[in-house]
Length: 164
View 1 (cartoon, rainbow, N blue to C red):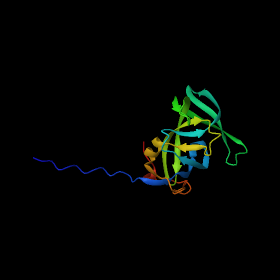
View 2 (view 1 turned 120 degrees about the horizontal axis):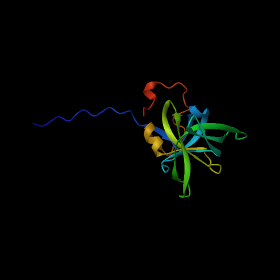
View 3 (view 1 turned 180 degrees about the horizontal axis):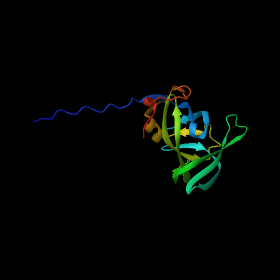
View 4 (view 1 turned 60 degrees about the horizontal axis):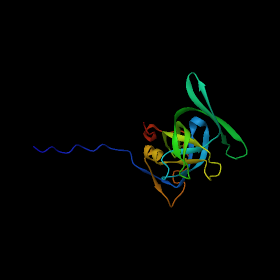
């Protein structure tokens, strides 16, 4: 007897983003941050200066400074350390980096993503969004376009939240 193939699961659609998008990191209170979408990077990375590891209730945290939107001042941010691992920098040299896991919003979509803390002061973008985050958010890049998703929407409906 031949079995009929089972019905394929319905998967959420893949969304198209430009090579640059505006994102938010609500857990870090970072709004309207221009990010470069970088399929060449596995892990996302954010600019972080003056990193300091500390413990709060036996949980490992990191404190770091991040440029304010006008780049004239700095915000001091804190996040739970998710991991520490070697990641290749833009020159291909592995360096030990702190990884945090935080909510990221692009358009009306959000997901928890891993972001490494890196020195990006000589880079045009304070945040790059790597392949792993693209996969979690189900994003596809149109390299000839920018800002396809519009500004992040503060109120996200459940159907737009990516569950992990």
